[in-house]
Image (cartoon, rainbow, N blue to C red; front, top):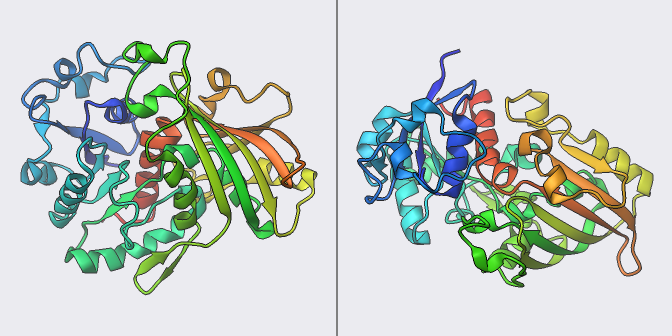
Length: 358
């Protein structure tokens, strides 16, 4: 098959670099445009990220040579590509306006940003869980006045470990949960080298994360009605989000109760067999298996297990009964792969497989 030509907005930042890393040899997509702020525009991509390339492999040669474009050059970029990935680092309203502008230029946007997550007709997709929410795109196109342009977003990195674990047990109806996340520095766009204050330190606050961690799952579990996505009203959740001195990987300690308490062996079996549309369609980035449970008491561990399924799988462990809730467990996912660029690439693969990018 001929590869689709794609662009990356915000290509020089941490998530933008991860897009470059993941798309360098993608079987379906070819990066032909990289865009960033005016201070990077006009430089070869390799020069624009010199001294701050943070990925585990060299810059893909074909992308290294691309001249960085100004993200505001919407006409020029949209004419070169079939769609764009967005990893913009701007004011939230500015991001919304710019992503809408690309969509109105008939250039679909697959966004890692939070700006549009609460726009009622913008789907916030975890492909294994709510692929059906992509049906809202037609309502969004009517609002935007477009034929093929639209915006689709992925949810916050903090919820990636535990939402799939809950969803595999959806018929038992989680009613309330408490989550504490331990989040890597790459989630702030930094490394342990560029953020020396994190050495031997824990910061018990990450701006905006706790609200995202309890509200965004409800939109994911919501329903399409009247041209918008109406969020679910349960489970009731409480979250604390803590920055820890880890390079990559978000770990969540979870306690949860259900309307109907599932047997512990059923939970393990459901997790072991849970799969969604990406697995059924055998999408290039879909992990097999999606959820992996560890029997060892000291797993999952961030350093050992964040790269499961090329960073796209979720690691689970320490499932046991709880004194206050029905159960507690630990979950882990890679925050810049599954939780950011990789999750967006999987959404794009799903869009392409379902013929929604045409």
